[in-house]
Length: 264
Image (cartoon, rainbow, N blue to C red; front, side, top):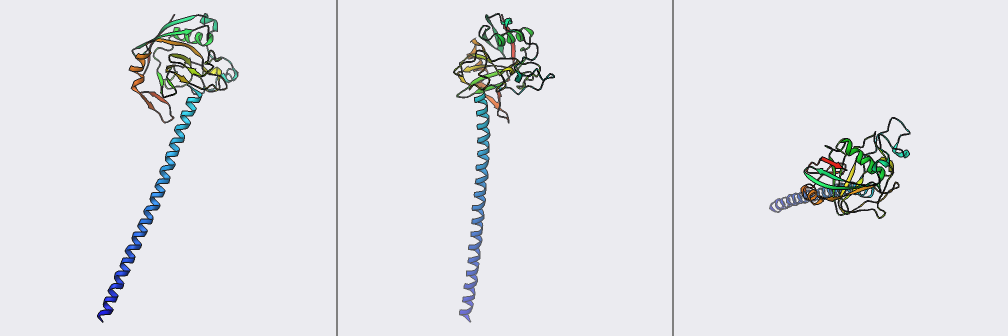
């Protein structure tokens, strides 16, 4: 009888070992499947994030400083796409085909500016008129870009967040660089991609050499340049960095406002 009991015990132990082995194998297989699934999900998330970031970067840096498309105006014929000015846009003669000088103060940083009324008469006329009417004072700079290929601050939107004014737009594109290079200190007009007559209140200043590819409407109207104070802007505002919104747009971490602007 003793051998039979030993055999039964050994059989039970063998069955128990088999059960434990099978259980371990099941757990191991489940863990491998879970890790594989988690890796696939993680990879998918990374790919989505990379694709989204690439889309926003490519859209921004190939199209340049853009604005939302203006809302439809009351008159269908008065549409930027139709190549017509909208609103109280002064004649190009208002720029007097001359150089205008003045100061643009962002927070407490005073920038000396120079506008070329001969090279970009329509845009300079509109800009000067807006300065004289007091439009820009108190408006914010809603966008700050700091990258290897572009360094700019963009200001002047009607809502402080980059929105275009549906009742104010003009064209055409003037004085855009043929090589798509906007050198340090350039002051230029923002506009909607592929729409030459969508320039409005918004303008941008480059604080480093920046390249923006032309689109079907051309490049971006250069109205002038910063003649002094750009180092102060960089050290007091741009070096503070930027915040990135869900749509990929970037705004200054240091809130930036046009506190004063003059031209003569």
